[in-house]
Length: 245
Length: 224
Image 1 (cartoon, rainbow over the protein chains, first blue to last red):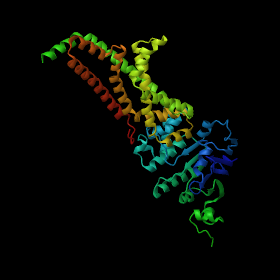
Image 2 (tube, rainbow over the protein chains, first blue to last red):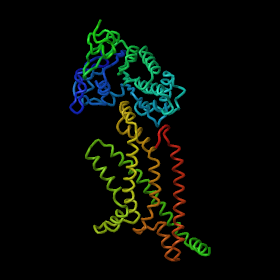
Image 3 (cartoon, rainbow over the protein chains, first blue to last red):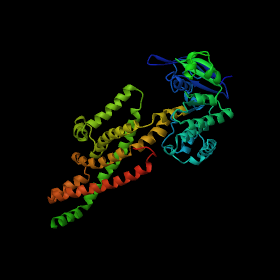
Image 4 (cartoon, chains in turn red, brown):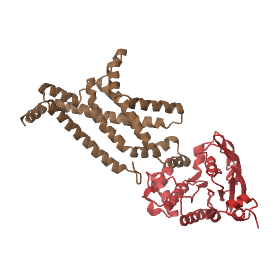
């Protein structure tokens, strides 16, 4: 059974249809990357999947249960999804350690000692153990990214969402993020990543979903989609000649 | 020099009354600082409602109490309400009147600080599964309060200074006792100068506490 099964998802803003019947699946342990031109609805899609935005139509099955229904326990659903935001969104009044333990203490009801232990493990995993008492303002962009991932992982989510994880990073740091995502991939962490970074897509997945005009226009292996896909618009997006030789 | 010595002797003779007045001033200023703070946080919380009508009422409350002189409100309650059979003591009128006024100002400081928050953090907290109340108490309020320390402590200073107008509704606080003293010895200049120095001393203590608080509670990398 798929972990996530999205069927005909629709989202409108002020009469403008941003998602127009998006359909795809994400299996346990799988990593998929969603790509597409700016404004195609990539970030909106992620936010609809954890109900930060309310979909206007369609179904979202999470382990077979439709979580788009009005009576869904939204907070429970959100706790199963680790969300790593584009600008990391670390709580700036809390230390690195507190950023991670807050959810564990207040949502998972762990004791301070148990939360600290769990957070310390995730920070070590992200090679951020030495920075646990620092505040977000004292971290580099790459370090913030790692803390944001550690915060998401600490809650033992069923799936990790990444929203443009490399948009704020230089190429070297982008490679670091790709390495982290690959590390998680090797540990069978299920991930859905929205990006416009072709290089990241090549590095972290073999399945790419191409979203355009609010619809899934193609889903294929990264190589096939990025180089020799039949659709000229898709080839153009990935910097390939519109006409195939 | 003689006049000053005479005045200080008068102050010594009336020290019990003056100290009593000072206690009343501190009681009123402390009370309205606490109730005004709690009221301000509650009003601020109400400004975050997504209900448009609710927001309109809260905004109207803030605008009304910031836009009307406190003295008018105190007179309305102390001299106006008895017309309808409602009689409140000068202390209660002062506490209620000041609280309504101070809460509106404090709410304004907090809403201004709120605009400087990173909305991404609030979204991240909701995405983690926190309730709206948890987002407010764990993320919004701790940051907004720290960013508002200069405004909030400035309000405490104003509370102390403005408490002197309570003597106009018969609340015998420090300034009322100074008035009393000067009416008896006719040393108006020395009396008001003395009152000014006492208020300045109290304000200086508040400023020192405020600076300490600001340094201790500063969010690293964020300017308040």
